[in-house]
Image 1 (cartoon, rainbow, N blue to C red):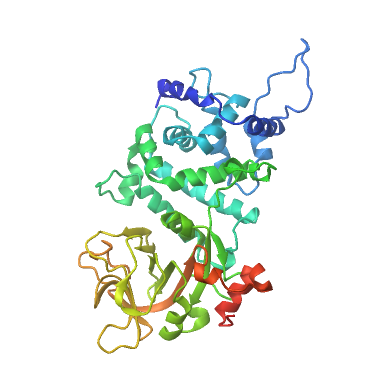
Image 2 (image 1 turned 180 degrees about the vertical axis):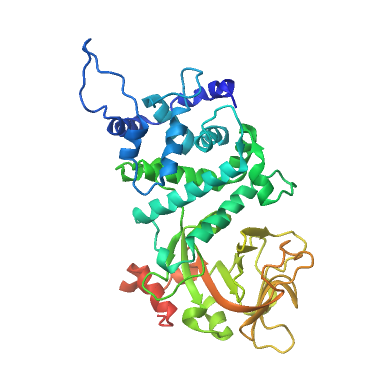
Length: 453
């Protein structure tokens, strides 16, 4: 992308923010650049203030990785809303505001414009897959560090979740795979050597919506915009994580890691993204299928998470309440997924309606929990003889087009978790409330240990 495309984006300077927002953001620029300190020249006029890298480093949130500070600065100084020059030595207020507009409200073209310059300072040259990978890693780790330091983990705990570094590596690999055009079969190593121009980066930003979400959260927290008294999407980290209930006051360690939660959240229906509540953990409830099924019945949409004895982590989203019956249930919103060793989502094919199955205590039908496929050949199956399961797909599950999810077709369970996602079902909302209802964490803990009211 050269000067002509840079010039075509100058229209973004039009009415970028409301008057109130512009006043606040202008004050941020003045704080960073020292423009609020009176200073006169011989002519009696204040000099035009510019933002330098040293100024940005002194102001930006301390949790931001050093290399990401330089990337943010490069993104700012590569925007010139007036001239056609590609890179400036420092950052003007117009460049600063344009950067914020592109990063937080821009379309795919505008966001890709600054992302490419955050990846590489060369405004005209392509970027390699390896450079993109390094940028993604920097951005994910910066956002997670910021969420932790700003106490915005929303009930999740770095100490009670899986390995964040491994999770970041898996999420990076997934976002890298989105660089490939549909149908392309490129190895990860080869992808690192491929060069991508502005058009490819724009398509990538459009396909991988999480890139824009990460960028918005990064800029909002790194520049302290979330501390603004003003409310609205501009000053919010966009709630990258759902609210977590059920592990804060317990001794439970979830097999989920923070990047995996960030990955799963936007793949859920919008009404099931805001709050996750732990209903069952084999760590707390023991290895009993009866207890397992009792804890998850009639609780609304849920996420089932399984870790097998060889370390593979996978599961499924159940869009409807689980019911104990010898028939298939659910609808086409259900899907299967993998979290380790790779991230993947597998949605319905329309081939059949075998979305969910839960049965127990019958002699004529299979007893256990299943998702996809057919009896005795499920995409994911947990047997009522707790501890065993299978994931059969030769070559793919007919319901979800998923591959084998577990390390081996027949697997041994290490851990099972079930999370209620979204608000309580309406039937629960009609119950008489007590003082415990004002403390959802205490309520979740009581339910975890079987002290339901």
